[in-house]
Length: 247
Length: 284
Image (cartoon, rainbow over all chains, first blue to last red; front, side):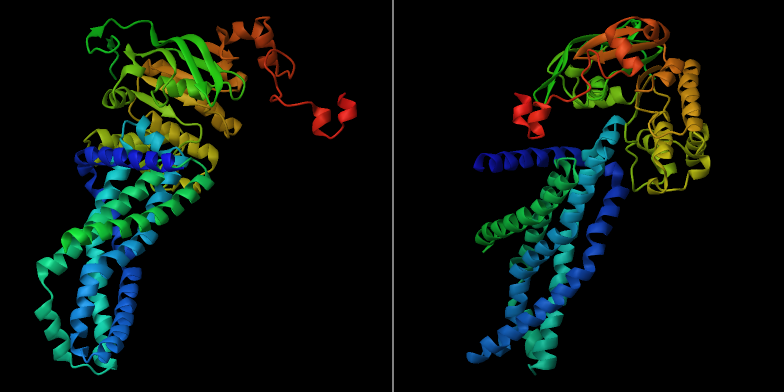
């Protein structure tokens, strides 16, 4: 069992090298890369925006009552922004991205494997790693930070709606404390870095699972499930490691 | 198409041999089953060679060895003078640029229209003006009778139509070697007749080499110049289709006569039938 898991990790590592080696060749398929950015990025906007808004609203509500116990409601904007930029934005977006875009990558590539479309490409001397896998990997790395930024913006707007419009916190205090205490490099950019890494990890897991799935309907179903489970665990684990280093 | 011969593992050209594909001592074990046990086979240049044999005997596996999609356990596979097992991935892709392959299940790209499926190899490898791409694709689609279906998606096609689109795609770059894996399955008699004529015409006019994996002996008899009958991990018989049909060997008699009894077992190995039905006394 442990041996199998280690073998999978090793195979995924080798797969990553194959993808990186295929990226120069994939640049001539830039239209496919743009199509994938649209598919995994733009098409994920609705779920990301909706969830960002509600996460921000809940966060604001919980923090307002907690901070009120210490007379610190003025720090609401700062705490919400730091929580979103540093942690919740990248992590929750990554978990949603794995469920929305990761699964579709796995299922699509898995079905291409099951219906011999990848073999057909190989027989037409077209490298599926360059034409199918690398564009999805690049799309994951580019789309994830953008989606996390959108999540953060909607989260702050949700927090503002609850904290200022509903609970009566002063508007100037909300924005003023936030802009005074949030640092671009330490807080905002670190979150963007995290998002890019999460995007790469999820795209790697999703494409690896799809590419190596047994060519059966059950195989594709298991691969899709493994994408969500593995991505979620790996994202949380990497988040801890990156946070420890970026603190 | 490059018809210059290359010695195995080197790039130095050699004079073209009579055989486009030459297999020696092929041995393959798949899933614990010995599929090929020292198979020797020559596919002559410019001819249509049919590979026949009972289901599960490894016909598709053989063509996958030839195209380097699957590695054999032992043996030499020379395609146009290049030893396939020794080729790097890049060299394999170079070799495949000269091979047209019709998949058993058509393997059309489901997100592309019929037109884009057929145009795919051209767009990937050649920088041609759109007008020329359009003309080449429409010519090929006309040849398989599907010019009018150019804008349809694969999901809108019948199995037979998909096969014809796949055929148009496989021959789009005038390959030196065409491999047809079960090209007649799912075709109505009219389409079958047209595809047969197309295979024969392509071979005769372009001088290409063709490998035809098929079960339909009547069709093979009309198209092929040479037939290899594979059974029991070996070449059971080979020769001109007419000569094979008339040959009095247990292999050819059983296979071409469609008989259940013979050297090729019809039934998959199983334990005693009476025992399976729950009659131990009867079995004893």
